[in-house]
Image (cartoon, rainbow, N blue to C red; front, side):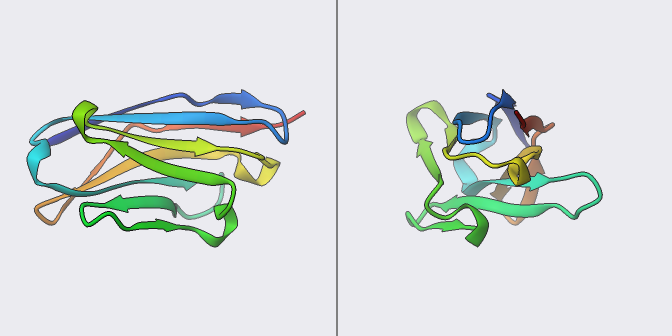
Length: 115
């Protein structure tokens, strides 16, 4: 079992920045991918960014050049640095991990971009 705890969401003005953090605990040694998804009201959950044990990263087209995912293995933590935020980025952001073929999710952290 893997337990994920997110933090760092909040209210920010358009053009602002936020950094989300997700710390994993439990059976972390078999995690081979971690990432962030988001879900806006009335819309399906979508991948934002992911990082893999081979070093590869993936980003949704909508966030390329604005968001950066990084991972601190010593702290079992993955970060999502979000810059140049737009109102369309408003959503509930979920941390996600894959371990031995199983998916694990955090509880979600709200990001609201509004003036």
